[in-house]
Amino acid sequence: MFGLGGILAISAMIIGMAVNSPAGRKLGELGAQVQASGRPPTPDQTATIQRLQERLGRATVVVAALLALAAAAMAVARYA
Image (cartoon, rainbow, N blue to C red; front, side, top):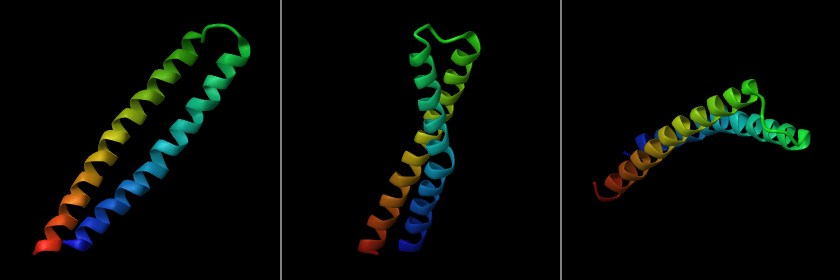
């Protein structure tokens, strides 16, 4: 069970690095562009922001679920 928990935790880390990190960086860059322009975001920027936020939201839920399963697997292994 420790092995399964470790695999789940590593999977969560990989998803976080592969999905959340680039999406967060792009979202930050886009937010800086909007702020620097001093105007509301264009429709294209708004669509991109919404898409990135949705991607971050979905990936965060997946990572949280994987980490919860990893913790449960390791807890069960402790008493097995």
